[in-house]
Length: 107
Length: 122
Image 1 (tube, chains in turn orange, green):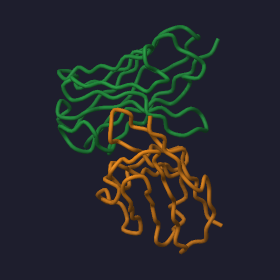
Image 2: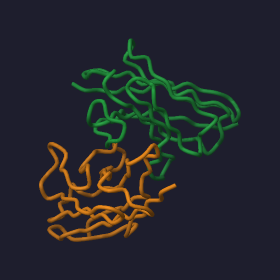
Image 3: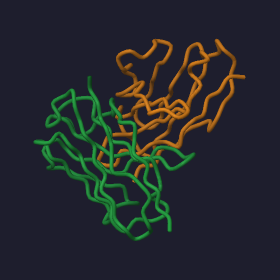
Image 4: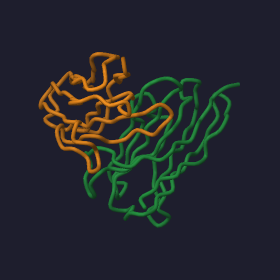
């Protein structure tokens, strides 16, 4: 089975900072990768699918890139409302595995 | 408005069974694959199971294979998860979710329900 890892597991950054989260698949998954944001006590929200396509309504400060095994989620200018845990997910096969998550907060 | 509403959670003893339901509205339910995802208290997201729009393709996580059964009733716009031989480690908030695009097997999840809590404890 393909395993998904994320780094870092948590980070603290200042408002306005550029934040990058990495997701790695143990085998190639082409661009079958999504990113979700989950704020405390809330339902997960789809941010990006197909590795780099921004979901409708998601602020343009969020972007995704990568293909194969290595992917990144970038927040170009961190805002207070971006405090959340971010998960990657692969969906190239019958096992829709999530990464362990990256918790982002404000310094 | 596209909406998913889960129900059926509760407190259950180890080894017993529980059936979760997910009522869908606001979209053409029988055109979309549907999935269950769970989240144990304070933990990350874990994909549980998925079913294609016509029930022709079904998948399970290794952790639930042989114990859980996913099904759907397109006439009732409903998704189900039959959970048997429940264990303490099945304790979690269970979400149902729909795929972003119709008539695809592999896609991201764009709409999630609010979840229903399952607690397995004696």
